Length: 243
Image 1 (cartoon, rainbow, N blue to C red):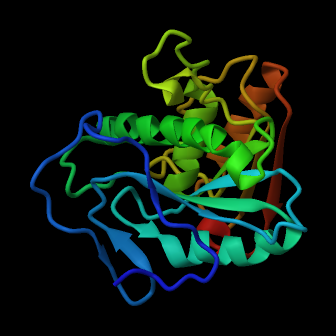
Image 2: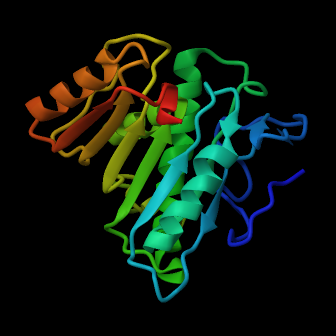
């Protein structure tokens, strides 16, 4: 059953027609009682808009966690909307593809979901005027595997293709900031992302009980070497994903 939301707009499919590396004849995605979504093969975004009088132009695209096998949609998207809409921030839940139904390696699921994250930023920029969003205040936020995706985008965005027939593809996929809560890379401590000098500012939050904490420390150190603003806040409580 779909999750009950009171202020979410209807979902917007990221692609009309063929989806890059899309699957056919897949099972219908499911939502369990705690609000976890599984089996996503058709990526989409759902926008949660603040009251018009409160909107400040900032938007966060939220990538729920779940090890690339599920999306903890209620905890990470719905609850974020309840908090940040009151602050005037638009929250946009990204329903990115999962495995199953995609039966791929760790590297391949990262490549597929990176396409979804890039497209999400472009689609949000395309809808910015309609949704009261400043095109220069669009960030990406992720928990756990969602933080892996957010950091992947912060390292691997592009400027868009000016000559693309699809007007959405002409938009930049660079987020204006990136946030990772309990960033995760299959429990490896090394920073796997190759950032650039024009990567967006990054803010990481991590619990010291969420091992290994070195991945967050290494990401921030590498960003600072490039001159990219980066900050890490560590907390003694919170567990994985700062839940």
